[in-house]
Image (cartoon, rainbow, N blue to C red; front, side):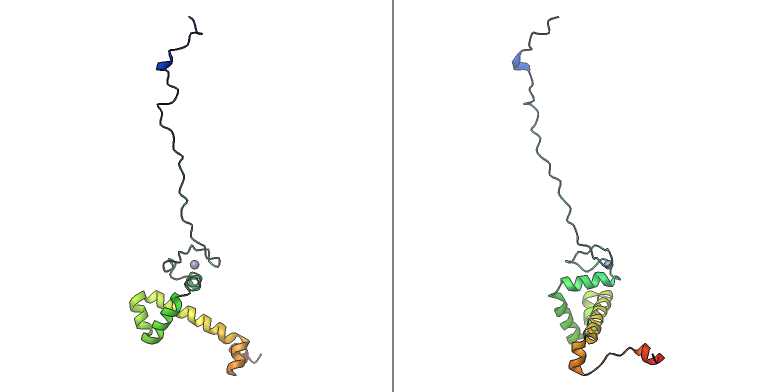
Length: 130
Ligand SMILES: [Zn+2]
């Protein structure tokens, strides 16, 4: 047998018949931010999935800075029933909890105490006389 004899060129498939592979880019999934305090993922475009987690709600309120005043206004004008009717009981509860916390923070600050003339006293310490 003579191996040096080349095959006829017109029959040779040099790879041209194969489709040129297109680069396949993997789509990266949209990564949700994580709430540091609890480790839950939070999609700030929606209400928190962990509806009982106060850290998720706090993060939600702090990232939706335009939404909070609107809901607060609705709460002041129409009461908790109106807020519950639109957003649900868990939402109202979470909103109340967040606002309460903010108020306590505010009253705890020395500036507000000085301005209003009130002093937040440690009730437990007074009761026990310490
Ligand atoms: Zn959470």
